[in-house]
Length: 465
Ligand code: NAD
Image (cartoon, rainbow, N blue to C red):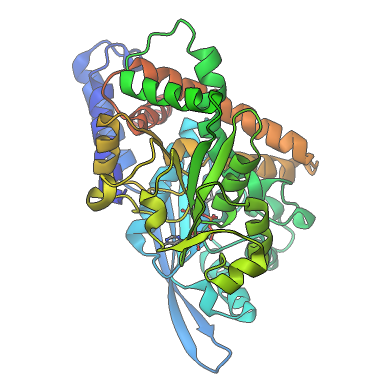
């Protein structure tokens, strides 16, 4: 989903809210329309876009000027918050879209944060560790005035990790001597004040968002509830029935990094309902095995930044029995569930009809276009959208940020239990609303819950007059 589509959906949802009798306790239709139009304009636009160029001397005596961004979308619900991405595809539009989605995600999960995102236009694989260290420090130097524990709190994202975040914290501390610095970033290493379980949180939360629907919501929360969405309802029941009859639910995962590998492992190990992970992919390869892949062995092989095994010799070295398929094959392979955990814009008009999965879960941000989303809705598939599914990381980031303020360390169990509790509250609210409503996609439901909250905050803060 691109930023135009995100804005379009904000527009559609705000139009509906403006017609909802009693919304914000405003009875006068004209006043409510005015207030909603005002909120729509604020939320469709961005508070601040900061672009800079990072100058880096490379180890071969070269010199580069690399575009870098920090976009602060909105902070009505709390300090700006969002990851920093290192990727050769980073551009202003992409970072802005991701910042808007952060605002919506934090509001949907009722976290006291607004939305921001950062990006550096580099392929981190083409730089040495020393060069990456320099790029990371320069990023903080460039944006030092714009970030901080009480203003804008970055974290890792695609192409960045706890090592890079630790370097950034170190630089932040050097620039601001004597000031609190631990809360300036989340996603730090545990030794450096990070939260235990942060690295796994997004992948675990992504799998939970789907598994909870099948395992808990279907059984407990749907009792006696009116269900208007017959085909989606059937999809969930069919899968549950299939498993009860001894056929494990098939899962395919695109992306085998922080999010994808952990989500795949969760599926592989999940005991309440039997799954088999039939396909995984990374930027070069799809691996397929009809009987299920050994995810533990694949994680072992890819430890220390290696890609998935991509030829016979590597498969033998990894102890994996799999067919090697083209990189995009994972999207259209025969499977029940498809977890998208790589990059944006993967399922679009041209390939949406080839998708065989009946449930799609967005671990990555914006991998499905608005058009494909609406098509899946029509044909009875379920799409669990990014702002619902991939919030595990930012929920744990909130705990890490809180921990840095009270200098008290939470155990991994406490962190992951809190994360699940928080996610389940939102999952219940979304699934209850989605399954009892008609026609609207689950993404629309999530945007509506989130925009209701943001509009209400803007109104209470006196910003909509
Ligand atoms: P990562 O860098 O650890 O892993 C990315 C994976 O995707 C790698 O396996 C890579 O080979 C693969 N990949 C990259 N480009 C690809 C392409 N064009 N086609 C297929 N595969 C490709 O990144 P991550 O942290 O796992 O993040 C994955 C996605 O999840 C991103 O969209 C990110 O914004 C989103 N996300 C991450 C977090 C987090 O906490 N890490 C939180 C929320 C959302």
